[in-house]
Structures are given as structure tokens and as C-alpha cells.
Image 1 (cartoon, rainbow, N blue to C red):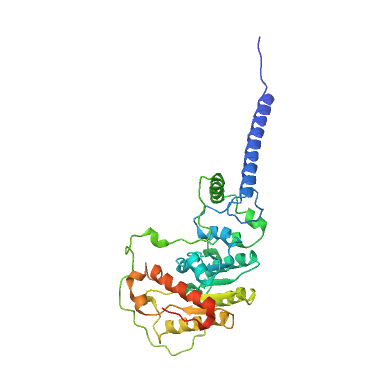
Image 2 (cartoon, one colour):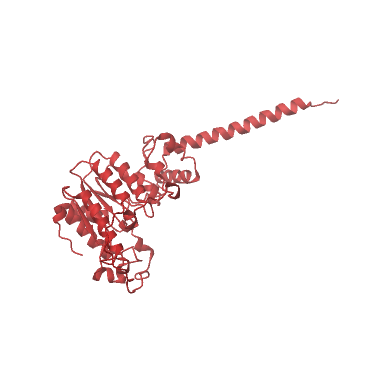
Length: 337
């Protein structure tokens, strides 16, 4: 007895095998896509709350702030760069009677902070206070080209399609598994208020700047006509808020070697920048601009700094006191620094 298999039979068999393989892959990809959408890896709230998972395990503030910025338990926010990271929400809550969330975005362009602010405002019908750390990047007279800024604007701005287009990545899948682990009780979410003490990474006194003589600067008698585009953008964002929202702008301290010399061009730029931001809060109730970028005993002590721009806890407590005083008395607040 003999048998034979025609080439058409072989082709048909391979065709069915490939169809089954691609079908399985497509079904698997679709299942993963549905899971990611339902889990909502960044806790953005765009697709509801299918599984009721509370919080995220994400330790990257750029993405974790989406979850925090829409959390209804908070009515006030701290925004800015890492120079606001040590401001502790719980201490401000106690001093001011508010509920603060830490929404800093270390290393981001100020436009990233503004995107977070807009997202926070859209998700809170009632906002009682904002604290914004206006450090050196905010006084720039040029805008960083967007292609060089990797901040995830798609998380905070744009429509659903833009958001979906960034969900099918390894990063989003990893965050999905983190949230599933939280739901199972196998993982704890990060702090809801966003506070993280970077001093915990170092042994006491392990990092501090070196004492040095401040650089000499040539006298400057001209007028600063440079624009401050970020001040204009922040003013536009603040103007959208009700007039009863208290706004405290903080120019954070630096080590004394970084303080602009009075009478120099850098000193004049700092003064002009300060006035640009002061105009944003002028006349607003319980609001203030506090300039901590000064040369004094506190900023001359290396023990108060981890590097030239990142201060330690002793200074953070002083700044919190100034913020609380401003939220009570506005521009008449007594600032002890």
C-alpha cells in the first residue's frame, strides 16, 4: 500500500498552522491590551476604576504624580523641581490646616510642572493653596526646545488616543504588574502625599558642598530687559484659578557661593526675575513671594546643604515655617531665615 501527500495539502496545513499562530498572538496581545487599560498602570482615571486599586508602586515622580494629582483627599499642592522635595506635606498640613500633596518633578523643565498644575486643577473643584518652588530654571530667559525634554506630557495633556499610544510599552506593563501586586497585597503603594526624603540615601554629613570664596563679578548698572517666559506661563495658569486660592512662590536657597552678587548682572537678573514673580501673587489673599536665595549664616553652613542647590532638613523646616506664615498673613508674614 502506498500513499502520497500533495504540495497543496502541505501548503494548506502550513497555512492553518500560521493562521492559528498569528491568531493566538493577536488574542494574547489583545488580552494584554485590555488588561493594561483596565488596570490603568499610571492610575490616571481615564478609563474609570475597574478593579478599585488604590495608589501606585511607581517611584518615578514624573509618572507617579498623575495618581497623586487627582487624589481627592488633597486640596493643596507643592510643585517645582527637586529643590522643593524636602518640604513635607504633613508639616504644612498641621501648620496651615490644609491637605497638601507633594507634586515635584525633579529635573523637569518648568513646563512639566505647569502640566502637572493644570492636571491637578482639572481634577479638583476646590483648591485651597499652591506652593511653587521658583528655582533658577524658572528665571531662564529662553525656553528649552520640547524635543530635548523627555517629560511625559502625554500623561497630563492631550486626549485618550495620545494616552493609549503610550500604554503599550514595557514601562506601562511593568507598572501594570506593580498595581496588580498592590491589589493582591503583595506590594505596598508609595506614599500618597508624594513625600520622599532624599537625605535617607546618605549617611549624616556624607554629602556637603565645599567652602569657597564667591566669584567676583563685574559691576552692572544697566537695565534688565530679558523676558521671563516661564513667569508669563505661570501667571496665565494662576489667573485661571479662583481668587481665593492662596499662592506662595518660594525662591529656594542655594549655597552662598551660588548667590548672585549684589550690583552684578546676575544680581540684577535675579532681582528682575523676583519682581516678575512677585507680580503674580501681588494682591492675592494669603499669598506671598519669599526669596530665600540670600547670603547669610544658614546658607554659609555646608552642613545645611547636600550640594550647591539641594538644602537639608534644617533649612526645609525654616522654609515650611515661612510658607505657613504666608498662608496665614500673606505679604505681611514675618519670615525668619
